[in-house]
Length: 483
Length: 147
Image (cartoon, rainbow over all chains, first blue to last red; front, side):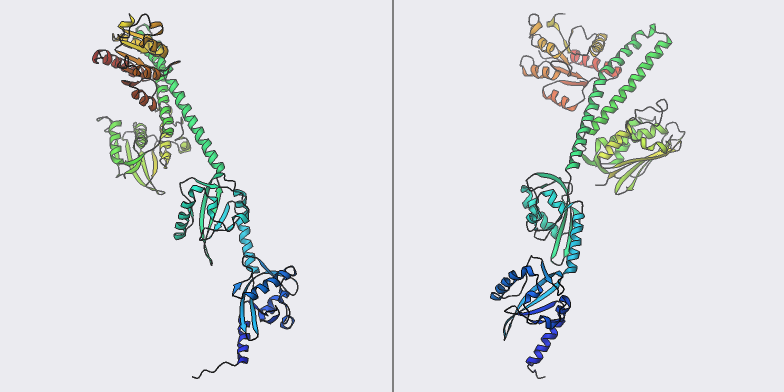
């Protein structure tokens, strides 16, 4: 097939067709800034007809206040014509025939023609985009936390009001600067590294899980924060949105609570400690009365000394348990691997020496090993097992079952007996200090055992609970993290 | 009893504890040469033959054992222990800490300062009596003191 050169006339026709087919309003201007050509979209967008525009200065599209400046820019472009967007970084506005202004984005291309340099300007109405941007900004400002949006290079692209308030920088002082300005100096280089790591494996997550994070204000002061990160995929690449929450208040409260607890534990310790000495006196001298003077006593006097002795013994147990309880609060747990079955066998052997307890029917299922603080977890088992023995002891055929199962991502154990059980109405009291569901003459106890168990298990990150029915037995459960 | 023939120096500020201890020792004939002082200051004067003991005691006749309480007014047991274990003339006298304190820092501290034994006084009488009896037999009859 023979290729014919396209007729200049035809060329012009194609050019016009192309122009009209362009999605954006296109205005072609000569080097004096006179409109030479416009497409249909220009007519639609600005509300003029073609004839009203041809030959007019291009400033017809521009707010009056900017005419002079635009003329100057236009001349500069003429000196160094190249394809570029107009007013990069600025918010541009155009004016319709009826005077309404609207936001636009404009790109410029020089066209070298026989008649000299022409400039083609593509004008895009970005009203819709601005609206959604504004919505986004409003949303951002409505967020309760300071939100900082950072690009892939760690440069701050967007922030909300809360960020200005929290950090003391103005918007202008933050936009375009590396996010590391908000991070303590000694951690900045490390943060750059973490940031790059996040970009490789972007997902919604909290920053520095398990670590105390601090941020730095403009005035250099530091404060504790909690930060969550979310990647946002955009046309310009990935952005990361960081929600920064000031947790100073919470940290202070936590510290106060910790201090109060420590004081309380120290107080409990010293009180119970100091109570022991006078108690030893009462016990000792009562014992002397009993041993050396009982032949001079009548039955009532002997009964009374034995009442004193029993009460002091009870008080002694109470003080010892309180000491253990307060000691537990101050003790750190050290996890090692524990063979549950071996531990339980040892405890049973200890609690029921020789053949005294042979009448108890033990059902022990296979039990998993765990990672726990061996001495305190032992205490948990001792308390549960001795309770099961104590409260099922008056049954004809005492039955104690021990097993395990998975529960909410943790390993749970149960100790079930067929003893006196308890009324579920009172189950909230079971694990509280000094709360008892049985009178002392029915079953001995100080009301500290299960409170201690609860404390130990919660220190391990687990939970305790129980079910039961009067005279139908009780089941006690505790769960521990599987790690 | 002459201060130079003391076998047991008993340092205890609580009069009830002291009475019960001495009573138990007497029961087993262990209190014949027991001398009771009621605080740390008095204990130091006895051990170093100073103050009111300056004229009547000779440091070359040490007791076979010192039973030492920790919590006492003025000078506490740990200070007494520190001073006597730092002095070459008195450091080899065996010291038994006899206290209510189960606090582990106290235990560590006492052994670190050279205590020879650490006994927590049981609250119940049987346990208490047994502890006193045993330590009396051990330190007065069984143990060979430095010569």
